[in-house]
Figure 1 (tube, rainbow, N blue to C red):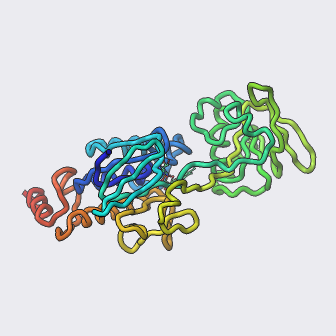
Figure 2 (cartoon, rainbow, N blue to C red):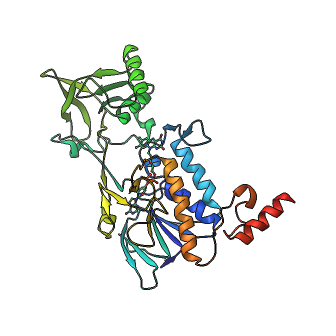
Figure 3 (cartoon, protein in one colour):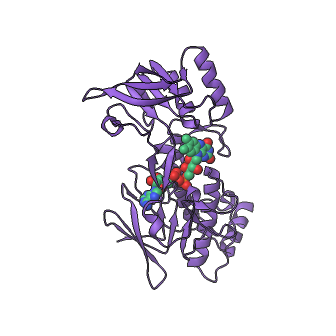
Length: 351
Ligand SMILES: Cc1cc2nc3c(=O)[nH]c(=O)nc-3n(C[C@H](O)[C@H](O)[C@H](O)COP(=O)(O)OP(=O)(O)OC[C@H]3O[C@@H](n4cnc5c(N)ncnc54)[C@H](O)[C@@H]3O)c2cc1C
């Protein structure tokens, strides 16, 4: 049995930052993630992309942000159970919890923070006859290692940000990029659409709209071409990779059966207070939760993680009044959240 204060389900940015905020309050955390590495969507879906809306970073690579979060929480020595999915939760009579994974690993904690993001990542797949056969033989649903596409012929399908952004990125390293979309208009950001137009004019992207990939062709070993239908006519485009980027189907997975209030695939929480769910002691933070005005942004997950940790601190220390602390004053390790400690730290800082 793994013992901890807060069992965090999901090691995306929200779960990782929760470890830091908990650490400031001397609460120990253990993270569970179904993926083999921490980082959630950032590592799994867009590790090489720059993010522009993290306060204090004009631009930061997604993988770099996760590396920095890992560095920031190292000092609090969180535990990790990776490659295992949290399957069941049991509330004991004393109010503590046991979370068990699909591989039978048991975690005992005083609170549970679900930071499960989109849940398990299920790409939306086009309905093509031999699609499953060519998976890992040329059909890819994520661009995890862009370098593997260098010098290759690529067909990307989709009309959202992912399709546009990866077409732009791969146009610089691939031999050919064909972007196929069933409409003339794209759903993605305007400046991405404009960049694609520029790359099209430069001959770096072959834009095929309104059109659809209707069949895959190849041998037993690998994909060799796709068949595209445009204006009722069919043509074949030779390619090494076909990357359909039609978004992800959000799937909460086993968490959906835990008796939590769910709305549109997300967990309802009390956002006026502390992001607790309808089960006291179970919190939901980051992309996985919903409340009026919810925004699925990294910085919102950070804020929610902070309030969750303070609530757990109050729950574990009844009668002790929590006082907001500044890390500039108290540092990282010299504070236990009480007024006495805060005053001591301020005096020390003034001295
Ligand atoms: C292409 C793209 C670009 C984006 N760009 C930006 C941006 O510029 N700025 C911004 O703020 N946001 C951006 N986002 C959104 C941002 O990635 C999310 O808001 C963020 O990842 C949410 O973090 P999280 O930790 O809540 O969840 P996630 O990152 O989704 O992590 C959740 C983790 O929980 C795990 N998990 C789920 N269920 C279980 C279970 N039962 N057991 C074990 N593990 C489980 C998953 O495996 C996953 O690792 C972007 C998203 C995408 C897809």
